[in-house]
Image (tube, rainbow, N blue to C red; front, side):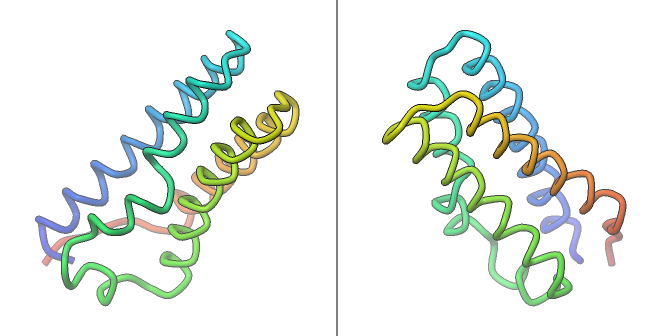
Length: 112
């Protein structure tokens, strides 16, 4: 992929990690407002920020993991708003971390 697209993806992944840390802090503080706000920022609304041409350059399975990542953040946000349950949020956060680990084990980004 292009250097610009790689920079976008790397920035997005750092954002995911920051969101995970802040969600974990929200769980620790038993604060659903923190969890909801932070998880929504990394949810599906981020998909609209993707640069043109990036999606075409990605393998299908990578795209699936990416969409699943955004959807898990959306689910965490929904749970924290609608029916706050720390254990359920922690379970979704663990799924999220497993998704990240799986992606990082499978893919390495190279540039043109």
